[in-house]
Length: 375
Image (tube, rainbow, N blue to C red; front, side, top):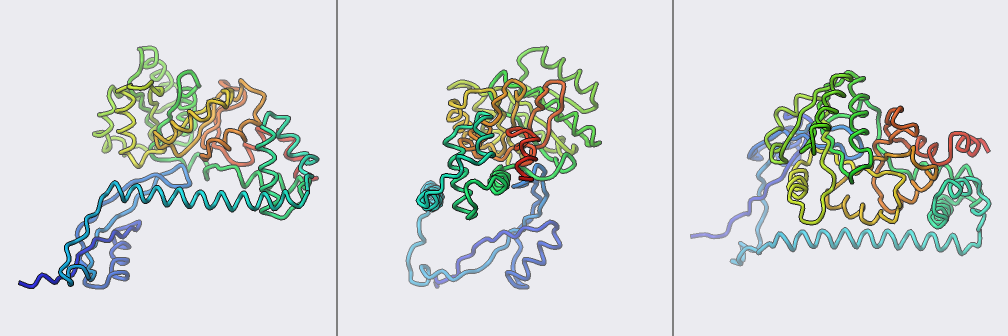
């Protein structure tokens, strides 16, 4: 019996349509490539607040197996070791990138140009509550990466705009499934309901899900908002129900899930919800952070963001603080793109989708931004 054989491997080809996927299969793997199966997948956009549908085609391809030809047993692959190696590589890449950044900053500092101290943009950020150390690092990175003079306020303003991570597009582009997560008493539900109203105003089919409401008052509040604004609402009593709701949820343009507050250690309900959401790759996960909170809690929130695999940061309670410059400190500690921002005259105002200009206006004021831009 001849044990020499070619190993069979599986490749995955993605495309917007099945026709395009099959064309790519032929171009990449030849006319005789064997298609095993195909499936349609809905997933969240990487840089936007929408979702996208793609077709995945699984193709069997042949590859020479030198170990088999030499009579050697196949290698044993440890999935846990593979995952560990992936994490180690990512950590090493991050370490090298940070080292390069530090070298660039040190070189800029070595030139002895401390003009950032006289930069009106830097001064306004500090006056607005931003940590001076964070502002210094921002100014030094601007100087190192752009070559601009440290006192050049226009350059620093433009660099600040490029450094503020946000999504892209407007309300019309916000689609798919979104879950808002966070601590109790931070205005999370209010932000979600106001967001549902903004989306309904765009004539979108919106569904708001309330997961495990604490009492009847929460249900009545949801029902009243749904009737007044014009979106559908439903209550889910268990995270397990999410696993069977996909077909129903896909009928809506946008689904907003109001999740329970982060539980304490050993909270079984929170653990079940966390597991259910991790399995839902199509969900956008927004960590809601109140800007009036002491940023010394940022480390705890960063740990929560990692645990819940959050990919967005939503801001609330801007009306409760005048020190909005600490938004810069928050993004320094919690580097997630900003999605939703509560209004500064909350709760009378409406939420906004974040963009760099809006965030700069929050920190510097519109007049301060305009003065810096024309100086």
